[in-house]
Image (cartoon, rainbow, N blue to C red):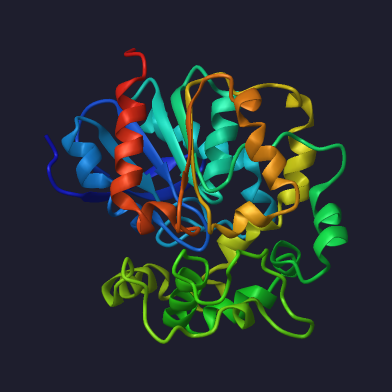
Length: 328
């Protein structure tokens, strides 16, 4: 049994991904979100591996040590789910349980929707599965929250890229603190709307101290993963946002296709995603969207970085979910 965390690179779907892995047994893939990397699952490797699972967390396309295609169109949801499918095969597995947080959640949900033959179970943290709407998402968000809504702000090439890459340590301190359940800035949580003429970091002042779940060593680790890429350190991740409307187009042939595999959802009651327009109705509709929903869990006092803020509760929920899946 692999008792220590190991790192290597694999070729999948035409690109090179960095992965961290530990343990042996049924495959569990952990997909991170923005602006993170596989390190965000540091608290999950040991407990899941000790329980008899092979745990693999890639730096997803465009992030940290993984390859960063130049073309923004190379970050569509079809590319991202294609990476997951190819990774399962590259790891020599017939199937996997796919767990995603933040942007990793839509990738996990979409992989389960399109390739249920490969997905034994799916878990999403923070972001629930969202049925395809009748119109493009970004204009709807712009109408509801203005041009300053961060997903719209991220659309202009080079703008957020330069802002976030200016001081990596500061960016991670501010992002991870401001969107956490310990944030002194949002009570109750509010969607991130950038002030006119400002930037996303204007919503995230430098914290006087880090929250108890986040250490200086953690900030240093995230910073090391992104060092050496200059002003393009976050461009790969931002390109995921630049495909939101394209994804809506690409998923048109699959409208109405459900997610029928066993599912788990975890959120925090201080997660800013819970304040997005229509999210209250979407969360209450989950049992209909996920007919094989095992549990929907809301962690009190928890913010956006769920598996980092509440590792013991997340690990317990994941192990309970994994333990109840059919063996095949």
